[in-house]
Length: 528
Image 1 (tube, helix red, strand yellow):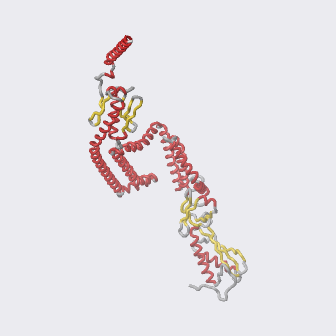
Image 2 (cartoon, helix red, strand yellow; image 1 turned 180 degrees about the vertical axis):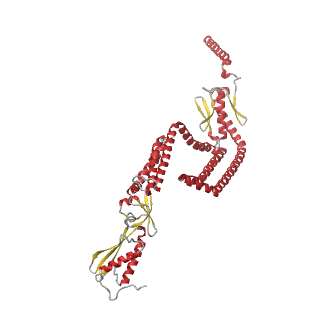
Image 3 (cartoon, helix red, strand yellow; image 1 turned 135 degrees about the vertical axis):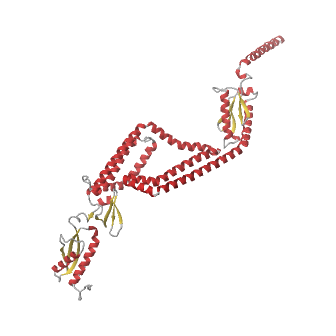
């Protein structure tokens, strides 16, 4: 038994010695165990925290060290840093040092074996070192960084204030120059020469300067906010966010423009055709309104209004043609905008479309023109303006009434001026006289009153109708013509005055409108 035990021990010792010899012979050939392997230090503010010697997967030791150095610096500069957020995770004999889910460093079993420690112990050691180093770094650097940040913020604020003051002075100087007599004369001459184009130039001179001032002010404030956000650690991320918000739309527009150069040429051609077409139509309308040429079916007074209608049609057609070629027109934003405006047009334009159609029909029906005396329902007055949507009328009491064109076409319109210039407008008034007064005398008195009234025509001659033979009186109606329909109220007043004078001189009583019998004493006005 002792012999077998001795033999077993001899064989076991022999095998162990051979394995130890093989491991010793292979150790110099393994590169990971080479004592002279290059070590890459991970430092923070000059203090070495740990080293990286081994590769990990596809990453070399140098790449591991470079990444760990970047992450560690970001952790140290994090404005929301908390030491408790640095933690360790161990999975399958491999540990990670993390901060908010971002890996600072990885400890493998080979790293722990080289340091002659377990993975857990090495991670705990590095955790304490990193926490202590970051806290010391922040204690040293934050006061200095805050002082520098304050100085830069003060300088940026001073520069912003100086720029805004200089911009305000520049704006005042430009406005003073624009208000000078020479500049006003130049703008007036340009407005006379270019017409509507000159008005646009004048409006730009007055309002464009304010728009430029607002745009430059907004740009300066944006640059200032970018600087402030970038200087303050707590808002540093906002700087890049704001900059991205500003540049992203510009980048999309620029890329869209570059990708659709051909479409832009199409838009330019359509815009040029629409512009020169409108100029030609405007010239035709102006010449027609002056009487230099005649447009078939269109009065001279309506030529400019017809041009406004045609201008809307031309612009609408041009917009419909170029819309598919506008960069970004196929985007969801453009589609949503189209649906929005389509809904607005559908819901809010029913009455507007009716008035627009009424305005178009008024242009060609020639119901009335500017200056005519008309009556619409209970409204009577002179036409001041005829627009595409409404007509403005001034009453004899100097009241301005706006009548929708749809109401004009849906009701009765009386035009007192339509025949006044040629055949004359017939004014008529009635009196009731008793049967004891000869009708020939009444006729003569009424005609004499008409002849004495200025504004009534002698030819065709005035005439009298006996419109009723009532129980107690005869009703006489005097008719006389005038060419000034707009002066109806004044003419009626003077005519009534003259009727009273004529009948008073003749001793004939006017008992209108209710006549039953002559009173015992005649009701006559005393002579002047």
